[in-house]
Length: 268
Image (cartoon, rainbow, N blue to C red; front, side):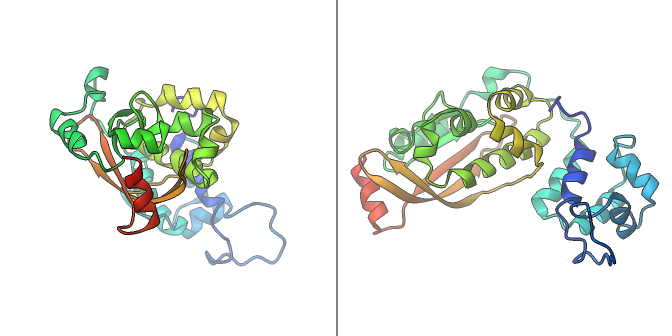
């Protein structure tokens, strides 16, 4: 994420701007001209001196202690995903990134065998940058982005078909960016080129990325418009595949006996 060399400060600033001052216990007698908490208000609520907190947010102190991070996270009301992201920015992993790009793109034979057996399910494997590496034929039939050679985030923001495929495009876009930012923090430098490309070609992506939201969703429901079928409502589960490659398996399915299930079976 080379476009911003003070990720920790930018994230803290974006979070304090989202905190309601009154609910945080700040009593004011004049009309506020800033969103959320002021820098000095956050510092005092977290038990820090305003000058020291300013050093953190301005990037002059990039390694605050665990106790300070915990205090800030509590005042900012960060959820588990946001706390993990904060930790990754302040205490980045010392583990080297995967050196062999081909290894990152190679799906294990056992996983490929499972995909061959799951002909009745839309299922696919993605790498850390959301490149689709392998998938079932049904996955590609349901969504063109779910076929090998496509990138889920590029499709969402740069392919005109995306707004047709995703009836709830705004929500999908927000989740895609927040999820990508979470992964980028866990794998420093690995996704910089992809982020730079998307920032250059999509103003919407750039705006969402700069909001510093993070998100990790392992299950849920998604609506997809399928040619010749209409809108399908499918559930999904995700499975992180153990190993340095960072692969994730997505499996979609319909509620048994539902019209969506019947329509999905008709695509096989």
